[in-house]
Amino acid sequence: MLECYWYLPLSGYIKVNTDGASRGNPGNAGWAAVYRDHNGIVIGTYVGGLGVATNYEAKSTAIVEGIAKAIEQGWLHIWVDTDSATAAKAFQTDNVLWKVWAKWDRIKLSNIELRITSSWREVNFAADHRANKGLGLNRGCKQWWNGKPPFLTQIENPELTYYRFLN
Image: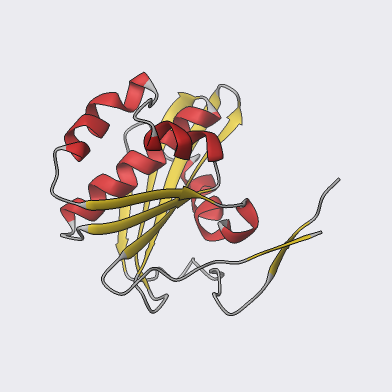
């Protein structure tokens, strides 16, 4: 059993927890991003449908869509946290999936400060639950909620210890 934690972003930063989901690989897929300020307050939730896609495509799409929406909202200091170490490394090394390359190229031209990290799903459950909502959306359909939507009943708490159980 390993301890893990959800960390608050620094003051002035927005933390974007992202996740993608696919029922089958490939299969019906969706993605989500949950935005929180330095106090841990949910300031937005974004969900989208992908149609048939792989799990990796869904996770990569969640990252670029999450960043693009943050930029659209005027948030220029962004910390993206995903539960996919592979996707995080791809963005850190500028070796992203070809299907998200064009959007990633536009993001890189933006005047933003960007950090992309990965953490275990045990501290990314709000985005995980929302990504499953994206599974029910048609390809290209996106939904945005300002603030914390009423259906987001559980969010990570920076004052709690979470546990990852090993096999």
